[in-house]
Length: 234
Image 1 (cartoon, helix red, strand yellow):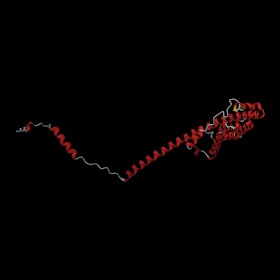
Image 2 (spheres, rainbow, N blue to C red; image 1 turned 135 degrees about the vertical axis):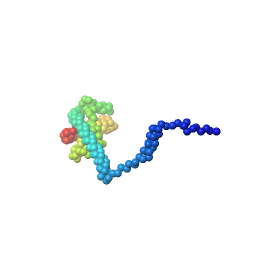
Image 3 (cartoon, rainbow, N blue to C red; image 1 turned 120 degrees about the vertical axis):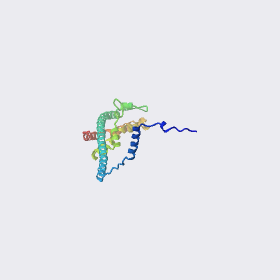
Image 4 (tube, one colour; image 1 turned 45 degrees about the horizontal axis):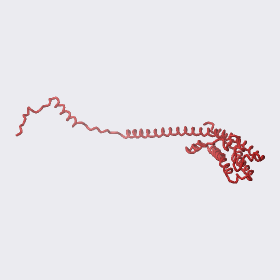
């Protein structure tokens, strides 16, 4: 049988603590509910602030994007101008070299002894008609900056005349650079190795040099100068 402890034996809380607990419960029960009431002006003000913040962010983003695009445009156009200057110098040097080749070919056509050095037992000796360093093309003609300008749509930011001028330059450059494979077609053909065709072979080489470079270069150099002047601010 369970024994019941007398009421005096139960643990008792201090009167002060018991009073605080009782008051806390009462305060929690009597905590008033706060409802924020806003008028239409406050809602309009908050909405306006949000809209303004969004518009400001869009304007700043557009501004910095535009700034970046302008800087990128200037950099690419500067590189394009530098590429044109380098190519102009290369073409000018190549032109002087090809005029010397012309003289050599003329000598080979006039003097059989020189012609025999050009074609000996079916073997082509290119050095007989080319001065040192005995090549067809001395320099590479680059179009890296031009391709970058087109890929980044920089050409849309320049006037139509400048774009037309640049297109003409790089089209002529491509033809100029095509001299090497054209000469190769002539010299690597079976017919060019036949002794009886020696004079015809020299004439074909002469005409290829003339058509692909000598005739084209003076106008190309003029186009370079005009384009470089137009891009001078970059």
